[in-house]
Amino acid sequence: MEIKKKDVRALTKEQLRDFFKKQGDQSFRGNQVYEWLWQKAAHSFDAMTNLSKKTREMLEANFVINHIQVDQLQRSTDGTIKNAVRLHDGLIVESVLIPTDTRTTACVSSQVGCSLDCKFCATARLKRMRNLNPDEIYDQVVAIDNESRLYYDRPLSNIVFMGMGEPLMNYNNVLKAIEKITAKEGLGMSPKRITVSTSGVPKIIRKMADEGVKFKLAVSLHSAIDEVRTNIMPFNATFTLKDLRESLQYWYQKTKSRITYEYVVWDGINDTQKDIDALIKFCKFAPAKVNLIEYNPIDEGVFQQASDTAITTYVNSLQKHGITVTVRRSRGKDIDAACGQLANKSGA
Ligand code: SAH
Image (cartoon, rainbow, N blue to C red):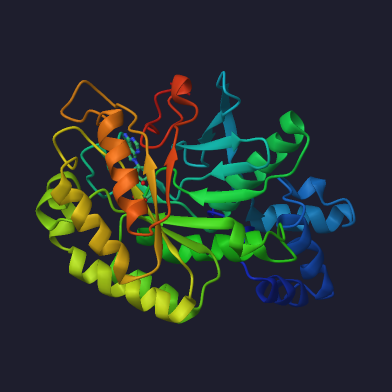
């Protein structure tokens, strides 16, 4: 019977050092391998050219590197690039590169599918198949960094966890990936350039605050009225706005980091003065800014983007109360790469 080999990237540096010691070799080989795996993002043991052939064969005999593979790359007319990423077990996730004049942002996935059931999101229809491992998240970032250098002649500058899945439902692996992304022995990126976006899992938001994480937090709010929010984001029945609000107040107390609320205004759903007033009130609980995002239709269904007038009313009312608000246009719509459109439709 063939023994299933372990993915070498599940090992810490210490474990790698121990492994070499047990093999009767020197433990610093563990550091070399670790550097190849993370800093140099090697796809194979053969690429580790400062190791002897014997050592590489020994590694090959003991471990695998379950690297992701970019199966298909689609480019939008606005410069956005979408990767269909094949995982070692054949499942597919998507990640997106979003270039602007000054920055390149990677939008990465944290789960295959999603366990939440947001009525306006295409990913929700896939259901959750599994969590991504830290290295699968890391690999998406490396792939986009490479593409950024290749197509835009500059490194990746920002990362948002706004791809498929709910990052806080896979928190440990997301955190491990971020540790590698920010480590000197990884990509060395500043955590301030990373935003984790969540539908709002109060328990984990508190845990993050306690751990003193340095990345930014965005919350997909969409409504500050329980009844409305539960209708469009059913898990709000369990994780209510009160719980969410308290966890966000705790987050701000601990981190002093301002929260971003992502918010789509839909016709007939959250476009009244009552909705605006509730949002204004919610914004007073902890320092926050509001990002009004454009709705990307996922079918002919009940959700329609509200009129420009409704959006202007939102903007004016929020500003009148001293709340920073930005209106974000979608990118990559022609290749189904915009928010909420990631649903593995590329056929890869
Ligand atoms: N689960 C996480 C991250 C993924 S969604 C979260 O909920 O934050 C990334 C963002 O896209 C969220 O703000 C989400 O509410 C939004 N979104 C989902 N479907 C959308 C759609 N069809 N049009 C516009 N934004 C959408």
